[in-house]
Image 1 (cartoon, rainbow, N blue to C red):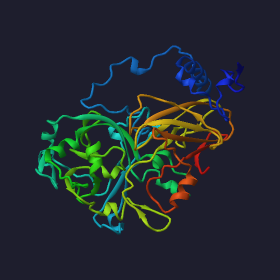
Image 2 (tube, one colour):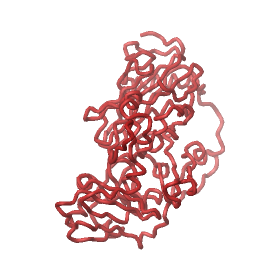
Image 3 (cartoon, rainbow, N blue to C red):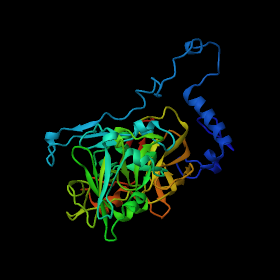
Image 4 (tube, rainbow, N blue to C red):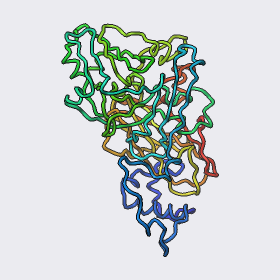
Length: 439
């Protein structure tokens, strides 16, 4: 054992697993050791005082009454918030003068665990949020079926439901990293178009079985009830595998910006395929080739062609703390933590580097680990005050490994706007300031 020079802390050097101060994940798996070291470091870094005399006002007087629907503390309202909606003027949109694009993002730097609060779940709307009366709304399943049927929310609630934890990611999440101008972009602006929730709904296979789909059916055209009738083509195999019509999120009815009163949910597929405000499922033998799968949501390739129906989300990860939404006040022990996910299945491993990818150490994964869901990783890091470059690299259960940015650009070019899943880097300066860097 030796004493850490900065903090006079007992740290076993055998627990250092990579250069730059990364420590064995056993420090956080062993709660007793982790607590002792972390508390001592926290006191030194933040000047915590021993409890003394004196009582604050809130201990002397009765508090407010309980609310019918809970809300955050007033001290959290400004700290934990999403970006203000980004609205695109309809007159500036060349392909549809009726379009209004609005986007809100999840502030991952302020969140713990893997479940995103419903009110902080990211949202992308192309035509605004319709004000739908659930008693006047239904979804119709028709086309290549024996028995076309209509289901309103009351009918759906009478079917056996399932509850699953899934992530949802916009294919444009992290898209700024295709270019070279992302240095000053904050974490939530960069990676805020992914969230994780507990979704409750009816398996689509159950409803399709009741309708009796044709053996020649290959696709389902899903259409929303928004003013632009956003529609996407879904492979029939996906629909029969694990798609659902979701009616609840995190235990309550889904919110209007998430598709109230019902939405299609396609686990592991890019977010825009999970059509909100669902009103039509048309069973057919070919894709519809809608504007959202031709002029939008296609991947431009180096040869000028466009790749269509690249629907599955790739394996990916991000470090949420430390990130450029904060700075490191003093040298000492910190937790590097973040999220990893894969559209195909479970996350098997996450590695962390603090030297720009020269050396890697395996992080601890918090369980239970769900398929097609965000997975929290964490690893202790003893920062000595020198410059560092923080990176994370995820591997899923099928052996797919998150690529470095250069390899992704080499394969796809610089023209794509969607499906960026390369390794991203946070640069830590000696003064503790953090910014995005291209490593």
